[in-house]
Image (cartoon, rainbow, N blue to C red; front, side, top):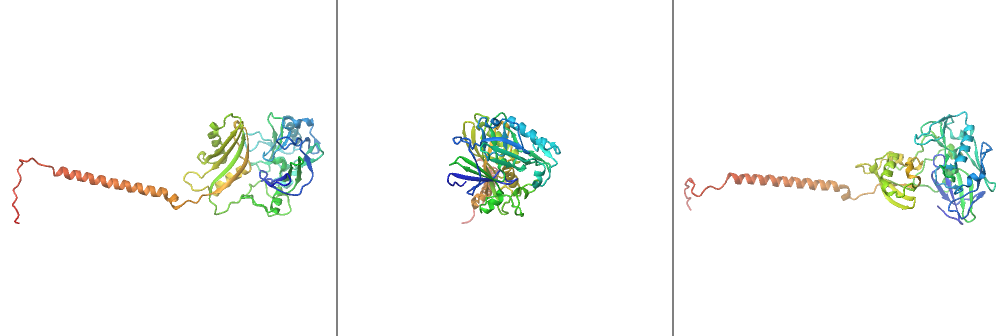
Length: 405
């Protein structure tokens, strides 16, 4: 994160890479006012949401409940108060009567999904309605379908709403999905937030800043990044061919339902292992800090069994699930936010570290063989002593001639 004159910007990525946030300094356009400059959150004064050009029939105060409307790009999706969510859902569904409503990819969640839409992301605007958010100062933020949908991972041409009901919490939480391919500027000095629709992948390349690991860029040019990758195919992450991965680390922040999380760490580790499709023994706790209901946990995934490193195929599977926020934990652990993840190469070991077990085994075999030989010799000696046993003094012995001197 780069700071400049009390301001910083973050650009959330494409259809596939919206969970990654990129920061830097860049010229900017119109901004909307912070609702409360003293709030610990980035609050904005949301007044109305339009679907297909029609405002939702809501009192603007519905967006002022509890913490108000909070912009949090670290949260994956968006969450509305119950009344706002129901109105939004009904408005969207009324515009999609030609599509079939289907079950979501995860049976544990009641996702609202539709099939029958084009597989080409660039054509989604022909099927799904435009959504617009209007703020108190008259500024508006236009949301394309990619800003409120996520792709169904099991059905081609199917998409699900990425805006959900915020349980019983009246707070409006606008997560990273809202600002996909949007340059977001946080002007803390003047208490303003700015939005500028752009192509984050292309912008990132122009700034000549590269990450340690990123999806393969599309060969097409001059197009919005949401049209470069077909939603029917997973993103291609690149790993150097000669890289041997020693472990994959990731940090998460939990707002938990337990007063004391520590006794439940094994249960959480088991759940994470299942989501990443690895053995529970591979998931290790690196660090744990807790204060109140908030906890910070650092994890690491190690190679399985006697393997010296994590295979690239396994690493790519784990990375994709982490990067695309497809790791779900039980509701009993509350909400979580993935802070960062990283891959670490295999640590080069010395000759002694690599051959330690072999040396110990060889020494053990030598000791066993040596003890066995000693035992055999001891037994043979005892047998000889028993054959040449002593005889009584008065026993008759054959006379022997003295040998000449």
